[in-house]
Amino acid sequence: MGKIVSFVKDADEAVAYEVGSFMGAGTSDGTKAMLRFKKADGTGAQDTVQVDFADNDGLGFKRACMAVANAFGGGKQGSYRCVANLLTGEFVGNITGVDTP
Image (cartoon, rainbow, N blue to C red; front, side, top):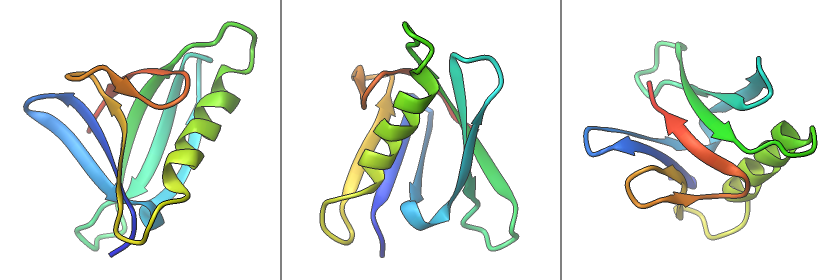
């Protein structure tokens, strides 16, 4: 099993993905990033996790992507990293919120 990253919105809404299932990222408004992952059900469909980020200088999306990439990298095979957790207030980089599928 590869490295796992998680996103927690609340006690009832949380998701976790293997890093290898990451498909890409995009933004539409400069304060939210859409992170796309392959679903684990084998259908080829995708889940989209929305993360909010701070953007004080026009580089917010770039910084959010770098923070996510850093969460994906490093560590041992099979390790776990939380990218965003609204319950505990734990976020990587300039990420400030999360909405799970």
